[in-house]
Image (cartoon, rainbow, N blue to C red; front, side, top):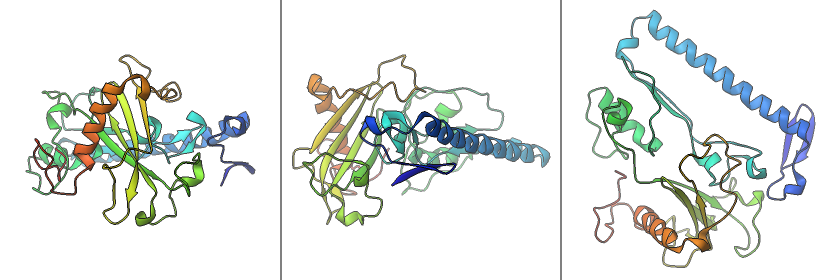
Length: 273
């Protein structure tokens, strides 16, 4: 695979830092990405203006979200094929009638969007919809977000024991043939990613076996949350075994059972609440 920018083509650098693209190529790629964001922002402005022009802004909830993040050279990665914060974290912006602009702390997930929009519209969410109602958090009336946010991304190396590279991202692999799944748990101060052997018959990671690998990254309070290259550079799993055990417990409770199967001591986790 190659990165292409204005006629220049360089190999995808991950994971060898010595193969990073030339500075002018990196700047061109980032400039193109920022231009796309600016164009999208302009289109959102046109949409909001149209709501005002048609006098429906007072009865319309607007939601803006992305389905994944995007690395622009952070960790020497270009693209979305990872479990790092830069790939898993996404924008989630809601405008409600009469609402004041505010940024709310706390962990949320895109799966919460449906029940939240239903509540803001005065409707009950269907009983089979995943996620939690965050309307109280959106309106500033209460709520502190979730204990954890969950994401996952696979890897497909020929040999699990060999070093992985960007060619193991499974983009052209049937899900039955994945080799390992990276289950990522983000809490207020940590991100844990556990790489489990893949059960292609059940389409779930095998929690009965030890992980192929475990990553733990600290996210202390007050960090610069827009500088994705400043964090998740040092794996501290060996230094914090108690944190690893706690977050692995959250991961197994969330993913370790099939849909509708109860986890001991908890309510059934077929639906994420």
